[in-house]
Image 1 (cartoon, rainbow, N blue to C red):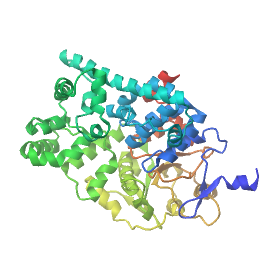
Image 2 (spheres, rainbow, N blue to C red):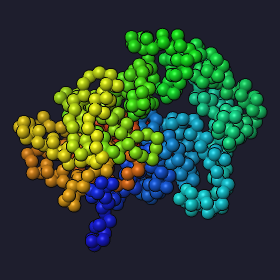
Image 3 (spheres, rainbow, N blue to C red):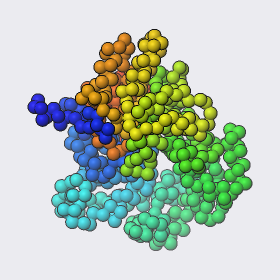
Image 4 (cartoon, helix red, strand yellow):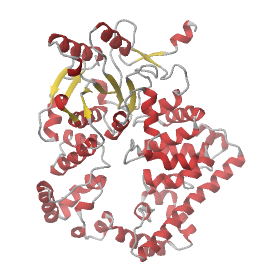
Length: 520
């Protein structure tokens, strides 16, 4: 290997530390790992398309599985915008494979994800040069004609589902949520892209009949919250059944228009006689409410649901969460601050830890601070972390120096040491001053000690990061990203922790078998 080639393996963090430019030295799975690790809010379209292209060159099927995991709002990352953008790219670049699995998209996301592929919404009427440049592809004229035809097939699929649901409703059977997310006359998407007319053309009905005979009765049958709001039937809303995101968005409206009923429901919720949905909320959304002064009793109960959901994933033990509260964590390319994500995931996983490491958190910047989070409301827990000193840089080495110093000073046994270290960060660590990566220095330090290095889970919470703290040959480490605690499942399900193993366990999960079976 030449010096120039060797140097290309390394980059620098924003704070000047050597880090890796490629997650796989053998370049067998670099593209897939890059897509798995970097697909988090803040990743822009060109970089996403680059990741998708490199991943698909290695394995088209794995790339589809990764994209479904990115979009999966129940057990995956739940990234709506990134997921929809990735689905568009797959449709344009791998339409044959895409048409085998597009009907599965609502099971992992929402029905309106399909609208993103309709004619006009996905504009494929531009020149070939523009389309090829926009979507990182190399289409010919015949390819474009084929794609435009397939777009109408997707519209027809939606129309058929609505027709099927009307028949099921008439028989008092379960129906899909297609009507809930179907286009509505004069909403923002319909106003811009005429989606209602497009759907009505496929249904061969007028917009008036579409409204009166399809969407209105189906939405009433589904008891869609917004339908009760629009018809001023606020007291008919069953707050126990309001979806998690709708509750977060609409609770102020409930307070205003159905004050007595909503207050009675909140009291029952406090007493454990009612329930609140939260399974599709991200933990950071609750932390964001607290930091913006919008926290209330509903937020508290939703947090409890998220805690229980995480605990149900499996048994966590001997883990310590490291929370990056450095200056860079307040910035990113999305409306979400990485620091809110880091705090929320640290708290929810620290709570899931059992035994001596329950609620243990290390907050770090220039100097790490060790916390044992006191039991209480989520508001009190967030304030405990926010009370830690903040700084402008990220000294990862001192976190491990502190762990080893405490161990040696107290003569701790290996069994008393942390087994897993979760690092929630944008990965922009301080320079080690030795020319080595932070991981290399940590490994060296443990080799000189009497202790085995813990597993290190590098959890990326900022899509602007383009480097990798470790690679596939660093056993006992892994690279994951995202805002959901669902992602810890792959770590709990296997004995080994390795960059490649964690990715494989994630996409080989039974959850994505329908996608795999449709493609193989």
